[in-house]
Amino acid sequence: MGSSHHGQDPDQLPLLELPVPAATVEPAAPRSVGLYLVRDLAAELAANPAIAWRFWSKVWTANGDDSECWLWVSSLNGASADGRSGAGYGNLHIKYDKHPVTGKLVEWVAYAHHVSWLLAGNADLTPGQVLRHSCDERSCANPHHLSVGTKADNYWDFRLREFEWRGPMNDPRGPGRRAADIREALRAAGADDYQTLLLPDSADLDLQRAAVAKARQAGFDQIGQGTLLPDDELAG
Image (tube, rainbow, N blue to C red):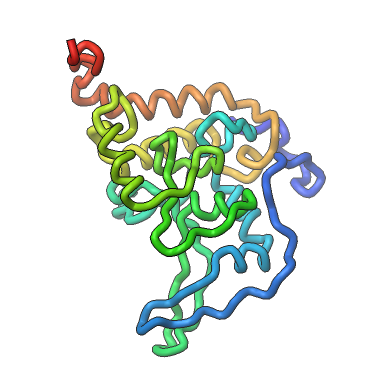
């Protein structure tokens, strides 16, 4: 499985048109508030374009289709050893910083959807703001599926859609296992290397879409939730 471009020099291949900034600024040094490090992710991305290339090599973008979820196929937030617990958000390692107070090296990890939001040219979040997924798929890093809101907005998004028929928020596996199952399905379908993820015209795109659909459905099939009535029938 894999892209029809396998075996060719990646530097000579037509990459998908994904946002990668040119290095324009120096990265800001981290500052400490007590033992907590405050960092500037937007400045770091602007200063180090290599981060963007590494980021996009971990995202399945359905060949850049803006309407589909762009799904993270690397490490997940708060995952256990088997990758099936936690919040289900994608994690991207940025770098290690030396803590100005303790002198210890501290890993800097950013949410994948936050990185995608900034790479798309959007302004960074201000204190109290969060990114909301219109698709409710936590491992999605498509900036077209994101919008800025407050924690209260995010809470009401959940309350309004937590019982949506076979929706992501109603998945009995929980967000961590759902994201891990989707990731593993994509990897098994060939979305696990630089050429498949970054190059257009992947030979396996239909197979990968089918794998995502099956993985999304799997949680409901496992416990027989298909016997439940849709919301409109419950209302009657």
